[in-house]
Length: 369
Image 1 (tube, rainbow, N blue to C red):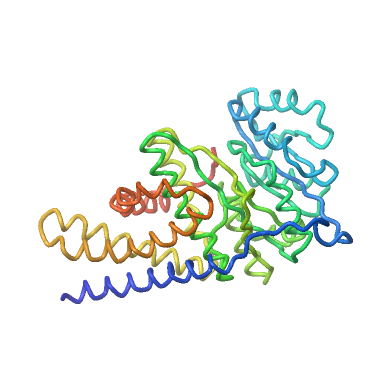
Image 2 (tube, helix red, strand yellow; image 1 turned 90 degrees about the vertical axis):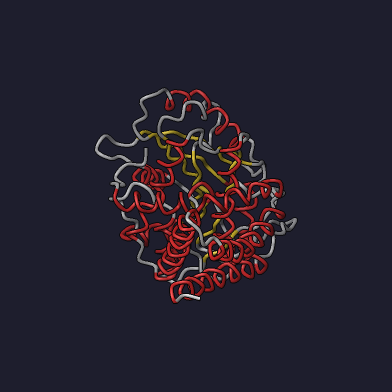
C-alpha cells in the first residue's frame, strides 16, 4: 500500500466522519408540530416575504399564485417583489397579478443599484415585518409553507431558519440534478442538526430583521451570489441561534436547469463565492470535500490505464456514507425514487465538481444573472 493511498484513506476518513456527523445531526432535528394556539400569542411575528427577480416573466403567474394561496392569514405576512432592471415584462405582470392583493406590493430597484443582494436590501428597507422570509422567483410553495415558518418563530427563539429546497425534473439529466441538489440540501440539514451549519439556500430562508441589520457589513455586496451563505456565516459569527425547519409543508420547489450551459453557469456561480468564506467550519468542510473529489478524479483517470482497485475501494467507502445520508433525507421528503440515479451521479460527480470549483475561483462573480 503506497503512502499516497494511505493519505487518500485519511482524507476519506475525515470526509466520511463529516457525513456520519451529518447523519446524526439529521436525526436530532425534530419535525415541527403545530399547536392549536399557534404558539406564544403574546409574541408578535409578522413575516415580510422578499422576492428579488430579474426577467422571470415565464414564472410570475405560478409564483404569485403559490404565495397568494398560503393558508396563513394575510394579516400575518406581506409579500414584496423587487424587480432588478428586468428587460422583459416581469414588472408589469406582477402589477397585474397583485392588483387586488392588499398585502402584496412590487417595486423597482434604483438605477444606481443592481444585483440580488441590493434587491433584497431594498425589499427589507420597504418591509414592515420583524421577520424576513426570502424565496426565488422560479420557485413555488405548498399552502402551508408560511404557516410553518410563522409557527416556528412563534414558539422558538431562532434567529435564522433554514428551509428545505427540492428540485424537480423529468429527463435523465434533470433527474441527476435533482439527486445532486438533494445531497446539498441533506448536508445543509445535517450540519444544522449538529449545530454547525455550513450551507443554506435563499430560496427558503427566514430570519429576524435585526440579524440582517446587524450583519450588513458581512454580506459581501461586491459578490453577486451569497445573499444566503454570508448571512449564515454572520449569524454564526455573532453567536445567533440557527435552526433547520423540518416539516411536511416546508420544501420549496424549483426546476432543474434545462441544459449543460445553464447548469454549469449556475454551479460556477455557486462555487465562485467560496474563496470569500471566512467561517472556519465551512472552509474546513469545503477543503475536505475538494480534496476527496480531487483524489477520486485522480484515481478515476488512473484506472483507465490500470490499477482500478484503489479507485473502486475509495468510491465504495465514500458511497456508503453518502447514500445513507441521502436515503434518510429523501425518505422523509418522499423523494426516494431519485436514488436510482445514485450510481451514475457517484461516477461523474468528482469530474464535474472539480471542474466547476476551479472555474468558479477564476471567473468574476460580479453578476447574478
